[in-house]
Length: 186
Image (cartoon, rainbow, N blue to C red; front, side, top):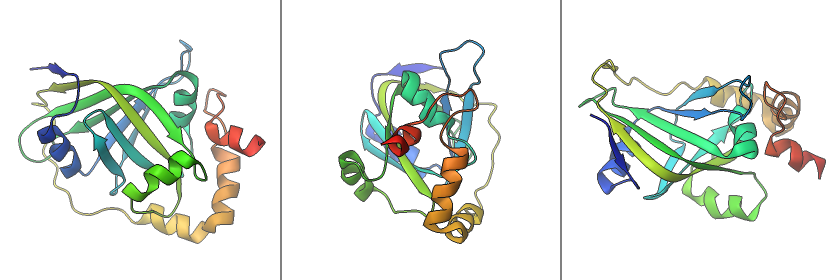
């Protein structure tokens, strides 16, 4: 049974923080552009208040979320109850990309444990919370976090990560620029 809410209740906030994985969805304005849907793990998400969640985004092979937010700001996060009672929770809102070295970064980064390979903070300014039943979501037991991404980032080092981001993270697969590309231009 789907229900709409204007913000996250304390119970919803607690539930979100108990989940081990969440999903991020964005899309360009272009009808022939590619929709992005990415899973996120590790202890990288924080509920800042009833209408704001943020996550520390790690360096990856693309930067679709950042490019789409820069173009149109639409951002949806989703959690599924893989353990316990069935539930799906989505937060719809306006995204904000926060880059290292900015005042906003300095304001937000104390909320997070710094993880190797962190490239930006993604903030969702929530305009709608929607829950649904999740009756067909399977049970999945959490075992542990994968360490592959951390090891990869540590092996690359800061210079290697910067070079990788310049090669892979300056535009979306549809050619949209990311905030990282704008920061490098300066």
